[in-house]
Length: 206
Image (cartoon, rainbow, N blue to C red):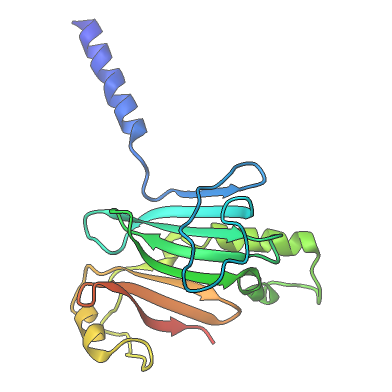
């Protein structure tokens, strides 16, 4: 009897340990590991090789387009160096469909460093460390918000149409994500059940 109870306890412990943690942010530098290939951006000519030039990958699973399953948020930096590459930001749903893609330059990731600099210049090592930190913090909890649109938010013309905005405003379970491009170009996005696509719902900063 004791043997049976002990075996059941071990199975319970191992089962709990094997469950993936949706809040965990995975980060890897390709200097020590090779990241999986990303689907190429068909809207622009590829400037680098998708696999051999991958420098750093950060990803996290989080609810976004579905209330019951996680999407995968991924940021992959490729190029000749950390300071001269391009980062591809994608969101992939649980079915494997890429529902959002945007490419930002390493310079856009580095730009906000000016607000933290104590001197007029920074060394290459300091700049590279900042780019790495920006990527590692890209998908932190503070960048997700529920609901995506609150009753206090003000509609911003030039983002989405008012009908889509009002629909999101009536959805308390909607999830928004925000991220910074450059020094002050803060962008807010959300999944629109009405349009069945990711939409830009506003901005911040600047």
